Length: 266
Image (cartoon, rainbow, N blue to C red; front, side, top):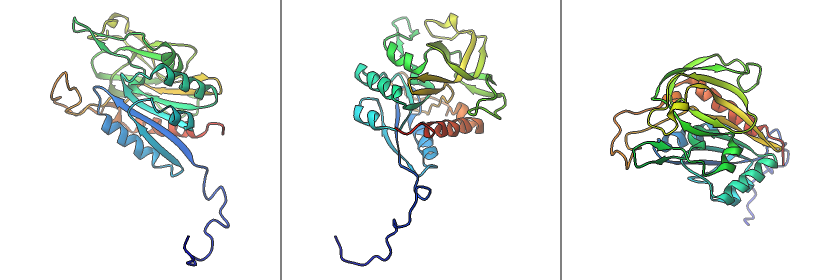
């Protein structure tokens, strides 16, 4: 310790209003066929709008101590399946009051079959029960309209129906969901084993309560860069940003982060 006089103690008159309590966030960003670098950076920029949020970033869910210690979790993944041990930690963490904002392909398990068709094996039933859904298929990326299912809910209050060009997720749902945004699909999910089941109404933005906590799921937000289809293809000709091009998507991301921060203190 130095004996140098640094003047008045800067903490002497500090109040909680001056320095809100630290919030520890775990961001899981990893997986296949998406521009994970872009999504990770955009999410970190949004989290940086909240100086009290300190974020650790992982490519998977296997740092169990980080999950246990987190005040909130955000995930943007594709085909990243937690081990059973990690799923059980996530279950207990949600039961105790944790809040998890799950984005886009978090609920995906993908396997390319010998006939060239994609399958969505049901290999992680606990994970999908926690999330409230499992990805099954999507039609080709094309414009579709997202409508508001519960306009009175604070997470979507003031949000108007909007059009996006994105992957329209055909979901197998699990448990009671509080659907906030939804969409209608009239097309089959091209290239997927269960493509014929895709037409119908599908949640886009929903809450899945769990114990004292819960999951907020947003299926929007596909993104792909030129190199993100490797090893299937060395180069993808377009830079796909989909809902990331829309201000309303960033509004939903910010609202979701606000919801995460509003959890009851442990």
